Picture 1 (spheres, one colour):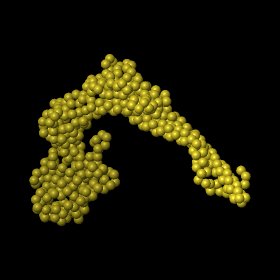
Picture 2 (picture 1 turned 120 degrees about the horizontal axis):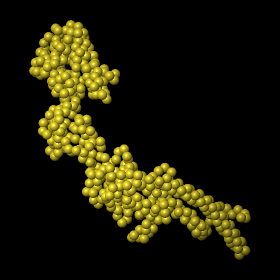
Picture 3 (picture 1 turned 120 degrees about the vertical axis):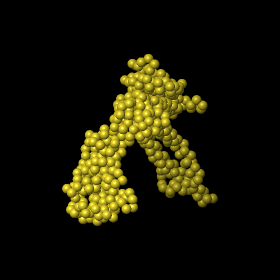
Picture 4 (picture 1 turned 135 degrees about the vertical axis):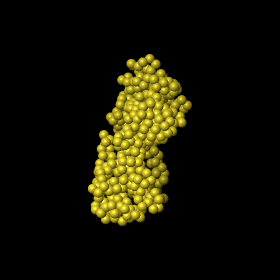
Length: 489
């Protein structure tokens, strides 16, 4: 380039403008690449959006094709209007039918009280002069529901002295301490331990009260007395109904579930049932009955197909399919108002997907009975643009109520609508599927464009420096000539 002419940054504004104009022209390929990169990123964003919509559809399709838990197997249980004594619910194993029910008795927890003592008297202290140990047995239900555990309660001789109120308080503390230790060491759970308290019917009397936390005959309390029969003295273990003065049972315990007044009792379809709980899960298969009020009034409940739940699933399916097809229509077809081509108009893969989904949704299903071979037969119609709409709820509900097997096969059979759609969608959204391949292809394209942009940036930097050096040389030559002319003149 000749001899040095000084920093190229000292160029006059005129030369600066010439350089910028030249670079602006030569920068055009870079701008085109940047536009191309942005288009690729926009396409990637659209593919990502489609991936999300297809994944949502895939999730809904998997619900419809689930052979172990079909959404059309749902059951609904409802009590007659005005029923107050009970409530009901049902799962898919319940059989449709009508039932009558009357609640005669609710299950209750076993409660025991001692006889009534003069709070300030010393009769209890006089009766015992040594340490006492007795056992209280409670239910610890396992899968069999019959396990029971005894907990030993130890009361020292010192705690059995004093006023009757003091002795009762000490026995109550000993019971609490023994059962808390059983909970702490894992022998019992917290909801299996009974409660103990001292109550005062009047300001001058006291009684020891024990109460199970579990209902029914199964949850009853039972006892093994101490050597000096402290429980018998208290009458806590007496086989009698307690009164204002004598101790014993608050509710008749009986000798078994059938005879115990601790159990619930209800009449179902004219037969008498007893249970240890107010939540009954084994009287009618698949039906849970919650007993709430013992009014003895006969009412009814009905188990039916869950038409509302099935409709909700079909509506979600319709929405998910329509969402995907609407998106594909917008992105692959010309805008009807502006005439502009959709961003994915040149992509045959996505145009083909839209057509395939429409065909999968509307083509008759092989092996179906007449009247249940297409979505239209259950009230789901295809619009002109390929989207779906539930137009006849009654047709769908009739199929749920009267022909669940055929309805399930319409969606989940070997050629079912959901089955073939799921296979189609899986090809796109599963790992390594068509959308992953398209995303990878776009990323590779963006990487190549970035490499080309980087190369152009380097070339433009060299070109700018070259221009600056050239114009600096020109500027220096002109200044030198001007200086010589002034000298000659």
